Image 1 (spheres, helix red, strand yellow):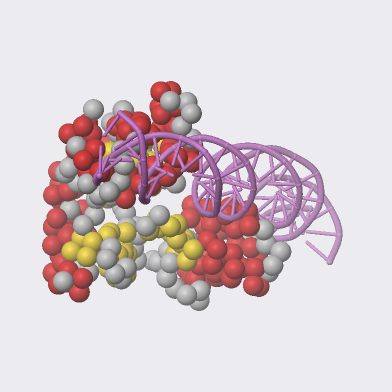
Image 2 (tube, protein in one colour):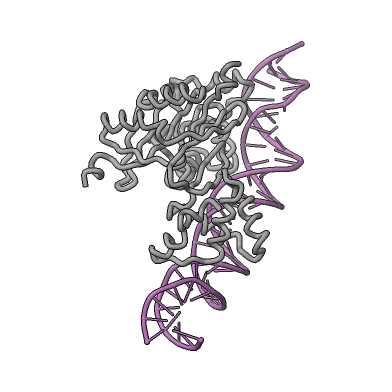
Length: 141
Length: 141
DNA sequence: CACTTTACTGCAATTTTTCGCAATAACGTT
DNA sequence: AACGTTATTGCGAAAAATTGCAGTAAAGTG
């Protein structure tokens, strides 16, 4: 129940939106499993509990949750995957050879952010980047 | 004609693929304008010259050109955009407030890559990242 | 707790994207 | 320059994603 710590209910209501069973179900579905979840998997989980929930509602709900920063989207090798938004932004390394996924902390990128701010004035606020490359093992070969 | 310098023709043929008029047209269409181009715009440009080219062919051709690293895809605020792949990798900063787009060189990120390699062994090989944040002007406000 | 407002959902229709297959044409070989 | 191989295209159909709208229900108010 990772998302319970976020107090999503208030976060939704305080902005004038409504907390509906559908929204709770989709949020739960994104949480389950912890990592990246595909749309089909989300639909499967939601409809396992409430078969009547419409597919288009799930599309709209994910878009909504993304807008509220409760869910983040990643495009990994053409696939669109969803993940619950963590309080602390983090990023992913994906090995283009073996597919391994490594999670790294935001702080790994701050040296680059500093350089960018210094030279362009732009303050990066990137959450949930996906960087591809070669992991240590594959690189050794 | 930015892409002519890439000698795309040989790059395609040397891998056992064929150079077709459709592929040239799509490549030209992605080049025109220089920056990011939407699918519909690409279709419009292609069909302006060859109306018979099928929409599904354009889908497949873009996928193909991406596989050969002649075209790169970016997901910016939900939209899927295409751009010609440059010899030198670069990245984009997008201001989430005013929408301004700034192009930055790969070297801006190398401090972060170094840190990542140092701590995880992972060698990042990211091309064409999209980082959001606030540009200098918007940040001042 | 009933009432009102209007954000949200489900449904059906539309649009976008993908897929299978037969016909076509690129390109190496003769 | 004609021929054969087979990658590629166009077409139609299927699947996926989006949208409009009328009915439903969440949440504030009396």
